[in-house]
Image (cartoon, rainbow, N blue to C red; front, top):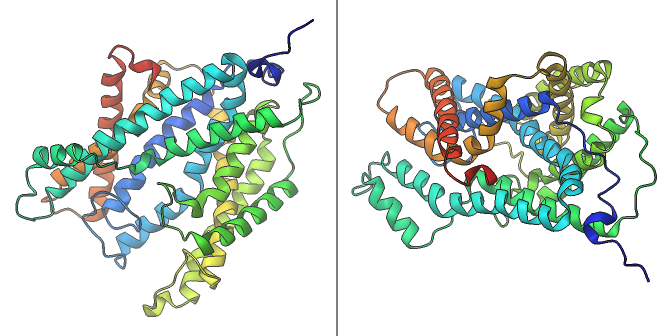
Length: 390
C-alpha cells in the first residue's frame, strides 16, 4: 500500500525554481518610491484620501497636475505590485510547500498588518492631529497612546498586505482544486488581442463593481472598486510564472502598448471636461454610468497595460545586472512601504510653516520621505529576527 502525495507536493512540484530577475526587484524599489510620492502628492492637493492634507483645493493648477499624477499612478502601480507578487507565488509554494508558504505569508504579511494597524497607523493619525489647531491636539505622544489604548485599528496603506493575504489564500484554494498542469513546456506571452480583451473585461467588471462599491468606499479595509484589475494581474502573474512571461515580453509588443497608454491618457481629462467640469459642475467618476465614470473604468486598464509592459521591458534592458546598492534597496523596499505613512506625515507636518509653492513642497516631501523611509527600514532590518518579516 503506497501513501498518497501530500498537498504541498501535489501540484507545486512541477514548477522549477529559477533565479530572481534583477530588473523585477529594481521595479519593486521604484514602485515603493512611487507609492511615497503618490501620498506626498495627496498631501499637497491631489485628490484622494490620506492622513494629512495640507491643501485640499482641487481647482488650483498644481492640484490638477498632482491629481493627474495620482490618477496615472492609481491606474497601474498597485496592480503591478500584485502582478509581481503573483509571479513569485507559485515558485514560493513549490520551494516551501503549502504549510510553510501559508505560515510565511502570515508572518510577512499578517504581522506588519497588525503592527501598522495598532501602532504605526495610530501614530500617523496622532502626528497629523498636531497640525489641526484643535486645543490639546498638539501632544502627539498623548494622542498616540490614547488611540493605542482604545485598540483603534488603522489599516492605511497596509490594505495591500491584507489583500495579498486573501490572494495567497485564494491561490492555495485554486491549487487544491485545479487539475495538475500537463507538461512543463513554455507558453508564449499572450498576444495583443488577448491584452485587448483583458482590458475590456476589466473595464466592464470595474463598472459593475462600482455600482455597488464606488471608488473610495472601503469594504473590510479594501477599495473593491479597483480590484478587477488587481485580481486579473495577480492571476496573470501566477499563470505567467511557469512560462516566465514577465521576462519574455517582446519589445515591439511593449512599445505598441506604451503608445496605447500614451494615446489613452488624455481621454479621461477630455471626458471629465465634456461632462461639465470646465463649468464647475461636479463630475462623478466613482460610480454610475455617466460618460466620465465609464471612460475612467476602461481608461485604467488601457493605461496600466502600456505602463506595466513598458516598464518591464525598459528595466529588463537597462537594469538587469547585479548591483550592491540596488540589492540593498530591494531588501529595504517592503520595510519602507510599511513605515512610510508616519514618516511622510511627520515630514509634511514639519514643513507646514514653510511658505513654498505646493509643487516644491511635494518634491521635497517625496524625496525626503523616500530617503527616511528606506533608512528606517534599513535600521529595522538590523534587529534580530526582523529579516524573516520584512
